[in-house]
Length: 362
Image (cartoon, rainbow, N blue to C red; front, top):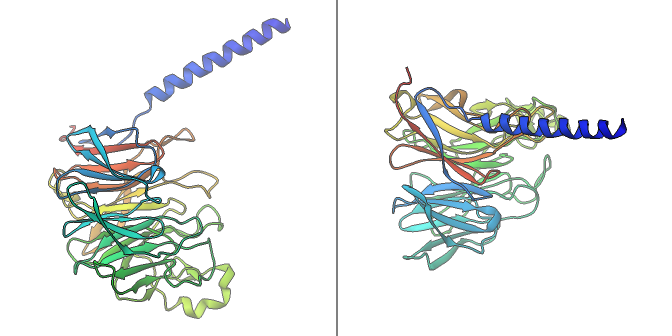
């Protein structure tokens, strides 16, 4: 009888395993009617930010391997490593013939047919702590913006460049704080109409499942303070700084709140011609997904509706990387392709997806 019980248990386990594989094979990603999402590239474990270059190629920062990879947008199998040996590369930007790459500790720019010529632009970014990503972007005046996250969950930083967005000239000269009190900005996007820089911010942890909300912030006047570590949300004091209520009243509240612990990272305004007209000017944001929450959230791509240059609401756009309690991918960055398609990276699965409009499904 004992032998039969063991065999029966083994058979049941095998059947369950087969059933799970069948269930997994039936799992699909979801996008709105009329859209199609396909796997554009794979075998890029740790892929982070994406940027299209002036040559029409798609460039990807593969942080885990310390590389920048160039892919043919027509055939992802045609790819090559153009830079390697880097220290956790994250932000990518093209400006006046240079490819700018933000590593954990510095920003370097490259040019030449094989990017053989290089210059260190910003040599000494602060390091340490869990927030190692360094996002970069250029403003309407051609100045370089660099986002540096905090060294902690909640603390008063000694280095004013932490939990801030800093501005330099394109060659790295000068250093000005554009916005402070921004715990961890991992996405920057320039609004195509107003010229205002938008920033996605990962807010603090350890206040429960639903507090505080993640944020989309608009970097307006230089030197504005957005609250962290003293307050969160609409100028609500953090419990660690309950005596800073007066200061919190002077800070800038978020332009839009997003579900707590969703971890918004890369984002892009839709400026292409492929999607229907109602998508023009809206913002797409990659939600990397939660860790400090009893029930997982995020792991998707959202559409932020924009009216008169400001975010007004958001909704799911591409989902399916979180299903049945299992994480199958973690969206990181999004970029608009030359043909108006949308490309999105997934560092967990090592994939890049392409989303395009194929017509009204009805």
